[in-house]
Length: 560
Image 1 (cartoon, rainbow, N blue to C red):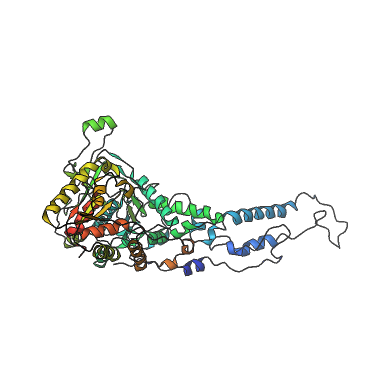
Image 2 (cartoon, rainbow, N blue to C red):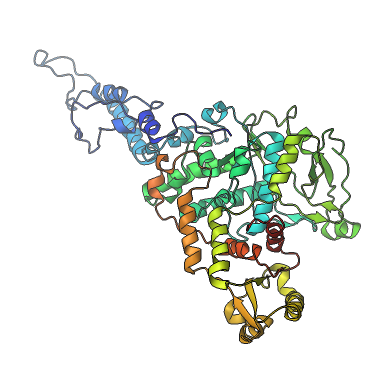
């Protein structure tokens, strides 16, 4: 595992690099023009030296504007025009004062944080910092979206891509449910990769500001994956600190005088990382292929590279939507690995990495076949199930042991979101059949743990309402976000520090601005942990990725 802590990325470096040279002004802080000349603290090493300004100022010796050339020994010297020479030093002084006025109000705030002044002076075209290029490390990141289970699926594909391409994976936060949406791959109606990357960046800044940023590595246990050296990772916050020379915590600044500069610097960083203006040589390669045109594969000989995929838009869809997409299979190693045009890029930026089976193919990532490479086989095996961190699993087992206290059935009922709201009857029928089977086989009451997006107040006229009222035959359990068990799990999780942070929070220059970190909402994860230990079985909603994850947990016995 590579420790990606660049030398000097601490507060000491910031203070050292921006410490001003001492200087003073002979005439004091006010020379009579109403301006403060003690601006030594404003100048960075790349800016005008303080001493140079003072020399310019003091070359302008005060004069008698009525007769500037009068001396005690030349009372009757020839009069010279009053409008020539005196105006020269006065005009110089006016220019200098104007410069200082603009510098004070527009540049000074930037100089308090590394990289601001330097970036402001540069061209608008995004460029990698010399520090980023000097790392010698190659990175890959992507744009997660939709609900948590979809984000987990994308994370697994990202781990695969990072392992295959031998790049360090930039680990993203968990996004709010459907804060960023992809669209529909089967309908060939999706958001462009650069736009979805930009949406993820904007939402990530919002998570920082609202104190709700939590890395997926703080929820999913990847310790064994990293310790096995199968993949290298770095937290997105640490990556931005290195790559853009700015702490994301600065997004929390409320000082109106600083907000503009901070906002510009964050926007500049975001436009670079998202590839908003395209790829930059040796810096970033922005992948703009998506599921409409590409299916990523991986073979030792790359034999499928360039072949047509079996799933293509039908003629009716082409005519109706006026599209002409052709889906081709591309070998990820051959296209993006050593020897490709992408190899020299320090950062490789994907859009969505979500994929699922569809009509005999995969929507975007089709890397399932066995390979002779033992490292790749080991990586494939490890990502089949990425369990929750111990604090979540322990909370789930504790609820089953201390609250339910008996063998139980778990029912995962997704009833309100997307397509599932149109299939409530079928979802309840599956649960009803399982319960009827248990009634014939075992003792009563039947203990049932329910996780659902249907609010309790809406249970009354549903099958769930019938179960809760029949207390003789059924005992129904559920968890709420405010339950003490869930809150204590969040407290323990935050204290554990699973986030793969290589740069201490205390060493980020903007940390003092983000003091509003909230406890994460772990309800969904603890519920899945409870369901993984349901000894009487599990009934999930068909097509739900949450149900699929619970089935995996039960298959691999992650609750044991």
